[in-house]
Image 1 (cartoon, rainbow, N blue to C red):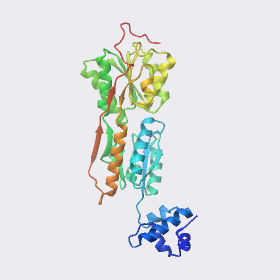
Image 2: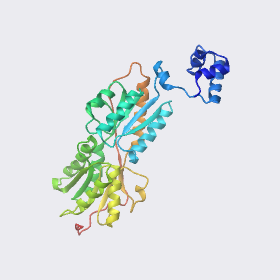
Image 3: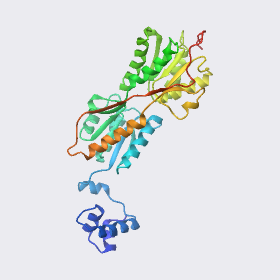
Image 4: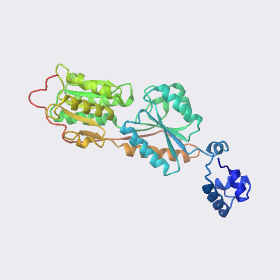
Length: 342
């Protein structure tokens, strides 16, 4: 491993001069800095960041803690965060919790021990109290989900508005029995989306039983497919379905395809998120387009601002962005003869 001593011996300089040149110390001439950097590059020198941090140099690493990287929603967030942070000299590292609070705690413990510059987190439903303690001294913000114990910095989507708009579109088409496949209500996003679904029915003057809601793990394809079968097997099945997560939307579409359900003739469907394949699935999926990229960019810029603010600015900050309904071919008025259960 090449060290600063090796570079110093090659250039016949002191080790301290080489170290200061690599740290861009103003006491070292530009000519010497150039010589040192050129030699370091030629010799394959890699800085020992841990040692630099022990001498007081700040970390340039930011941790991202999310439930499931397989979800296109989260991978888009990770990509935009990485792109924005990298443009300012910071590096993003990823941790995946699978919505397990103990895995979340283990990841946060390692990030804290590594002395990261900050953490961006999509928290589990009930973060461990030790997770709260670990995050408190760090520059951090919550994404999508908000837990009151984790601070007042939150970047999210108007989940209530998104599901209310989706459901209202189906009501406007004439549907009076609508199924909802969504995430568990113990998650803040799940409860707000369920509230939006029910608000649309209430505002339309429909009875509570007009909505058939099934709730489960938002990233579980197995749950999503089972929920579709459960709804379609009801004594009086729904004439339309609305979904409350990207992964559940994919599961619903897969199950409807396997069952041979004619969309929208037999069943209208409104999805969540606008994945690349949604526009050409079947007749084209009516869905809610989410401002994921804008939300992630805003969050990254906020964190970069906070990292450069001395002292750190602890002012509460909340950013809530709306979604937009994209109408395609998967929704239509219900047919005169209701679809029978399977």
